[in-house]
Structure formats: structure tokens, C-alpha cells
Amino acid sequence: MKFSVSIIFLFFLLSCAKQENTSGINNDLYKEIIKYQKENPIDKSDSQFLSDEHFIYEVVILPPKYSNPEDKNYSVFITMSVFGIRDDLKKLCYGVYQNEFLQKTVIYDEANFIEKFVTVKKKENIETYVLKNSPIIDIIYPVRLYNIVDGKLLFIDEIKGNNHRK
Image 1 (cartoon, one colour):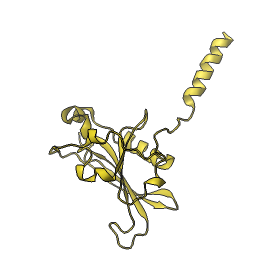
Image 2 (cartoon, helix red, strand yellow; image 1 turned 180 degrees about the vertical axis):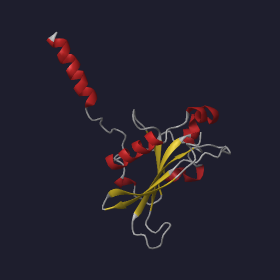
Image 3 (cartoon, rainbow, N blue to C red; image 1 turned 45 degrees about the horizontal axis):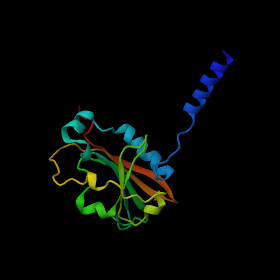
Image 4 (cartoon, helix red, strand yellow; image 1 turned 135 degrees about the vertical axis):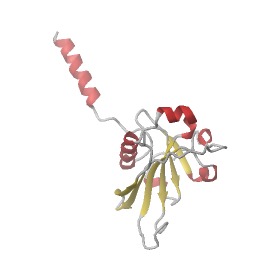
């Protein structure tokens, strides 16, 4: 009996252990992406209607002064695309990052700053998600906006989407 209680206790400890991030994305960004994905999951009915290749989570790294000439910080956006990977932006695209917790995610690096966010610069399976004919669809997912201040992600705002309209 003591042996079976010990086994159950050991199993409990192992299941409660912190999950290791093996995605290739640094921990700060990884946590923010996971949080976004939990709050904005891919709708199964939309996924069946459009096909799985259409849905991919996106991280966009933008240089300072991209949209505001006085901004001195790099910016990061996290969102979901229902249009796959844009063919005209695939040269800026890294990924596809995915593990048992992280759903398929790509990073567009328009700032040449990718090394600050990943431990592995991947360019795998990108062509799988490049769509030749994008659908006409009105699903808009929220966009989370961050600035990079002293090497850390600082949440700025969220632009609401209409993905929870059902």
C-alpha cells in the first residue's frame, strides 16, 4: 500500500512540475503567446469551414519609429491570422514554432531583432501556410501591443476583435 501511495504522490509531483519551454521562443514572449492563445483559441467550426492552414498565430516585431516618429522602442504585436502566411512577407517570417502547449505560431521580423526573441531561428513548414487564394472573411482577432523596454515586453494595449461574437 505504501508503494502505491508513493507512486501516486510521485506522479502528482511530476504532473505539477513546471513545463519546460522547448519551442525555440524565449520565455517572456512564449508566456505572452500562450496567454493570447488560451484567450483566443481557434474556433473549431471556423477551422472546419476554412481549413487548418488558414489559421496561424502571428508575432510581429516592428522597429522604433515604425508608426510614431517619436517612439524610441521596438514594438511587438501578437494576433491570429485567418489568412495564413502572406506570400509577400514570407521572407521576413520565422517559424513555424509549435509544441504540445504552443499552437502554430510564426514571427515576422521587420526590425531585424529576431535574436532577442528566439533561441532557434526556424524556417520550417512556412510554405504549408502560404495561401494562394485568401478567403473573404470578416473574422478579426484581437491584437495585443507591447513595447520592448530594457529587454522586457511591456504590455501597452489591446485592439479588440470580433472573434467572440457568437
